[in-house]
Image (spheres, one colour):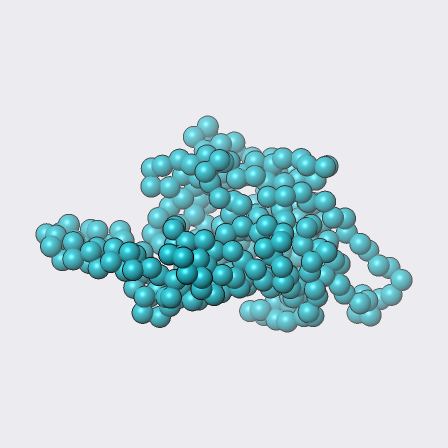
Length: 278
């Protein structure tokens, strides 16, 4: 999720000449204020670990703070999933932290598009139309596909100064063919833990994956179904229970061209050191 990191270098621009209601907002105002709040909250945080569940699978991700040009940046150091441990060299940074680490670079590329309301919360809307130039990372995609976000729309809470929603549009290349893909990530159930304000529930919707689902993946799904049918009933039920969410998502990709993923944070540990050192 907690959703790959750059320098947090922008300072908050405070305009005091006019009342708040009369001030002309800009994308720089919003992003700089958000970064200032994020940096202030993270002053006492040196590292953190997130235990989360996605499609029935538990993952443990560990982040450590680095100071770059006098500003904090949290780097993904390791990910544990299904008994395997990936180090920082082969782990991709989580989209949530990647956004905060790249936000300073977005300031000069962003446009402010006013206010909206999301689930009863006032949010500022900031749009970036050239994410590929900034180097924003990859989103949810099949392992053999190359997804590059090109346009982004970010909804920043006007009171808490956290991102409530991210929308991305981009292209995915698989089997030599390019398809348009859109993803929406909603961040909910924010909780403050030892100075960190973090979402404990994330819902991700990806549209346009049906055309990008290559024949090999479709064949893999059919083979999986055939193997399940041939298993003894007790074994089949156990595997179906373990793989239910993954199978449903693959079927949804093929039938509807989309995929929905819910990520639940089970535990957030702050300043506890690397997993396994406890």
